[in-house]
Image (cartoon, rainbow, N blue to C red; front, side, top):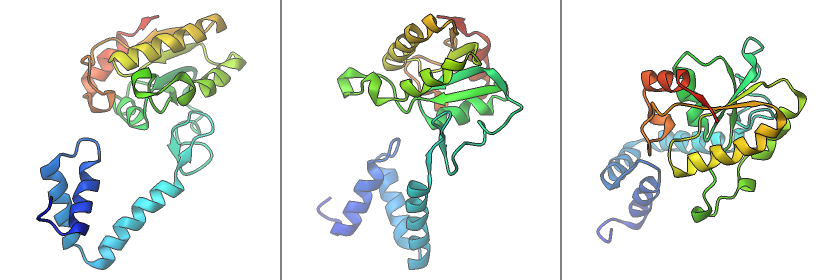
Length: 199
């Protein structure tokens, strides 16, 4: 990027570091930001900083929220006996869009991956086990991504939960292996929920 001025080159580099953003898209985004007025650019930057500083983990499910408890955990109409375990906050949105799931969630914020230096203590497993200690939850649905890391995480957690007397099920593989749950369509996720199996 020697032919770009340094501030522009750094902006392109920052956009390119985002997941799913390639070089061409990063350049388009960078040039779009440069076309904004200073006020618009500042508002955009402030919005990013405010989201980063204003969001925190829900004290119950570990999803991202701006309060102590997220909207889903604060909804008393949901099925209290079922918890769906997902890897990331985006997966909660994907599951909610099916309109089929009525229970609560638990967000791990990652998957076990020793190759990447992610160990069980690095994700929100301990918080899940704490939630299961009062006998309210009767079923835990493992909805981690259907890839090596997601499968390993599901198996690890199911071994910890089974001695607690809680039923552990796994979503069916209607979701393509190697894909991210966040990008699956509604029909595929609905089929995956309906075809879940006990682990």
